[in-house]
Length: 255
Ligand SMILES: CC[C@H](C(=O)O)C(=O)SCCNC(=O)CCNC(=O)[C@H](O)C(C)(C)COP(=O)(O)OP(=O)(O)OC[C@H]1O[C@@H](n2cnc3c(N)ncnc32)[C@H](O)[C@@H]1OP(=O)(O)O
Image: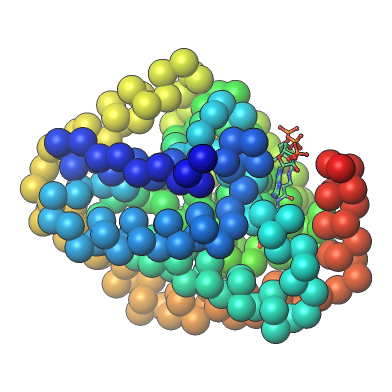
């Protein structure tokens, strides 16, 4: 089964679907490579106007990094290589000069929330939930998610989501300003298309001009360097016994 699916329509909508529902759409290196390719392609392809990222199935948008694929990364150096690869991809997603949407078709956990944060808009199923759970595993966000979240959300709400490592309902995620619209699970795609319809009718030059205003602000404040400082911090915590034990315990409960 393909680990990700790409489709596009005549109106310039490009859909990227993480297609690993049996693993709650966890991100491994193949999914990373697929994301990197589609971001570059949408950037370059004039007929593409908006990138929508979602997950297959109705249980999860994305459960973050694939713990099976990454649990063997024990040293700070090995962790940094993986974390910085995805951090670079999320920086490219953040600074894509076209609008982006994370359609949260279910739970978004850990790095799944970081992926969603890199998008301009987050639309969530009322059945879903969101949680920056990294703190429970003795690490911090490892793909630049905290840096981006603190740019995009009210400070105190962003800090609470990060420090509590709690899982919040979609409604609570909406009340905190992480989710922009909550949608019933039966019409996610239709509601998503309706949400963006008023924007993508306009000339792509209008859309990219507005997006570039935000990108310039982020670049002026060295957001990329700040994301990679965050990633460096996580890579050191990744190598701790607390983190390794947490991952081992998760994987053992699944055998
Ligand atoms: C890489 C770093 C990155 C970062 O922030 O820096 C991270 O994202 S760290 C990883 C953080 N993610 C997690 O800790 C999520 C772990 N998963 C869960 O908490 C649950 O699976 C949940 C809430 C996503 C879904 O719960 P549900 O009850 O619906 O499903 P199951 O737990 O029974 O899982 C079903 C199936 O999926 C596999 N699975 C789920 N998450 C992952 C994952 N992140 N990596 C690998 N595999 C995952 C789980 O093992 C089950 O597989 P099975 O073969 O059926 O046992």
